[in-house]
Length: 179
Image 1 (cartoon, helix red, strand yellow):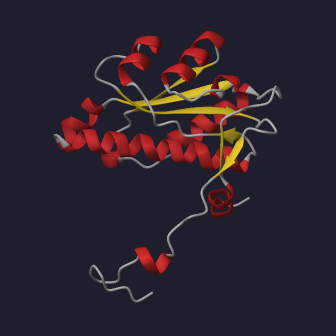
Image 2 (cartoon, one colour):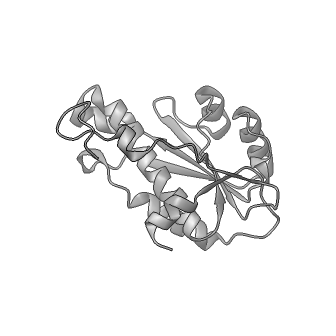
Image 3 (cartoon, one colour):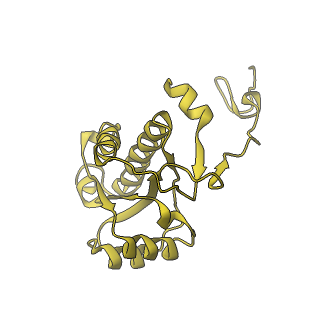
């Protein structure tokens, strides 16, 4: 499957089967995340891989997303904005979030190619997640990604209510919609 096909076929999975997922696959997904572009070539994105059931249960509760605790692996994506503030001042916080988002997208697209169910959980209560996983206060938790093979009833397709390209594309200036 090529990247465009992965983008078109991506689905959000909230419930996972008991089929095991290999640790080597998670390592490949993390490596795909590491390859994401980043502002200023600063590498401030980090990952926590969660497999302990009690922690997965707590993440599911904190994120108000039932059933993600059925995933064999959950990757928590975080970034350290201090590393980017040195290069970009206050814009560093924004770039930190953007860089982490690019890493998340790489994980999601590669997981889709591998037919591994996934979701991007962005409903994050920072303080509670940081407390649970002992994350330093200065870090930003950008996303939580449950990963595993989907249960038969666990996949929700992405909304197909997308704007038409000609509605959102401008040429040379705003409101010049020539496509």
